[in-house]
Length: 132
Image (cartoon, rainbow, N blue to C red; front, side, top):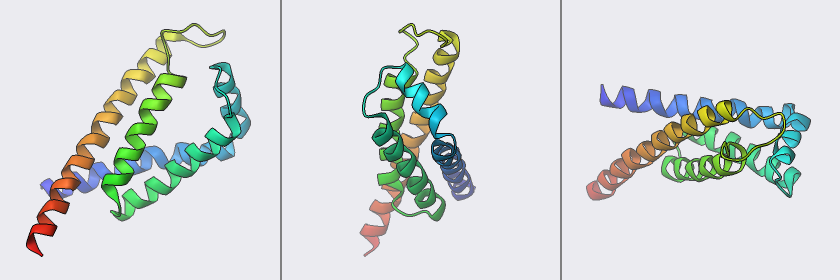
């Protein structure tokens, strides 16, 4: 049962990042506008990097490869996105602070899930190395 829950959680987290990663390229102008509204710089470069990381890490998570690295990388990305795009403590024209607050705390739950996934896979890596 533990294995099934771990695989299900890993795949759901992968799916959670895959679609937004793809959408960064499909809805490029919308994402650029959002990032610019929040005063971000180097928007095209950062947006492309975020999309590539999300897609690549999702594929690795689906394939159960480099899970610790991908989970921790996505966790860092979630924190950076939260601080820069879901900064509910700042006022932006046309941005709903209540919605940004909800997104911020939802992302903290995703962050926690990524940390747990990384920790669970560290245990598996440690066990596999001990067996060698």
